[in-house]
Image (cartoon, rainbow, N blue to C red; front, side, top):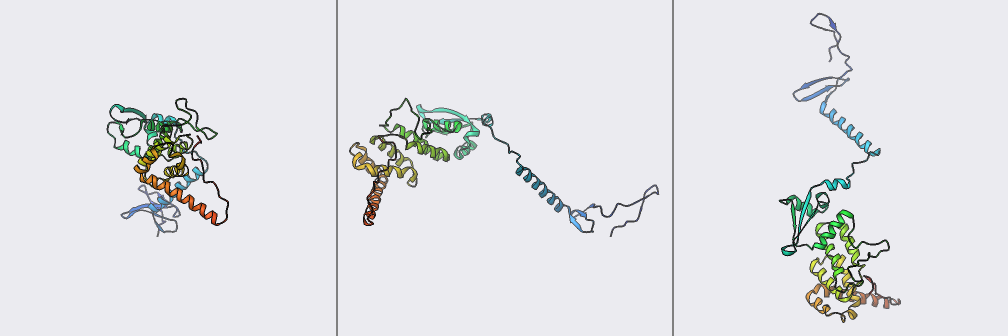
Length: 291
């Protein structure tokens, strides 16, 4: 019960008490309490929590009203620390540098930078050209040769129109495996799409297949399956154009198995269509540019 009788001050003057409808705050050992107008005791922490929820709701409402979030600009990337990348070893050892804010887009490099001592990261087992393509992609969103609007690769004066050695195929294949290791899925997809835009010969295809089957996991059907399809459709012809086909089959049994599986699956489909009375259809599907 609240005493509403006048309070007599030290001077003897009567001072009226505050209206009981107004909250009177006081402290107890159990914590701050407030007395509501109806006499109910309420923990002040509950009121603070309620106020906090109200403020959070206000912030959320402000965000929904269109206040833009801070944008990370390219200048912000360029202001970040410089990280040294040691690529290769021995006489091929090369020092490259890049901005940390861009490099940490790779989970692999982000962890390596955190653990690095001396401000450099060792990539001694990586291909220099592949790392260069990766850095070009980080800064520009593409790497040379770029894909054109017509779905082809821009011309490269330093290479022949037909890849006879596998150099062009291997360039993109090495970017593909590096992007997989670094966890940059968009670059992995980009490099894989470029592989299928290279016009190549049988020896180049063998060199490419050898790299893929020695550098990727059996579960990576994204890059392995098109190789099996390519050779499954053409091995009866292309095996006469290169001595590498037999060597590839003996050296990489998984390659031989994948090609054989493709051939048997294709024959099974043809047999099923014959039984169903369908006209036979060609299984030839060009995986890369025709020679």
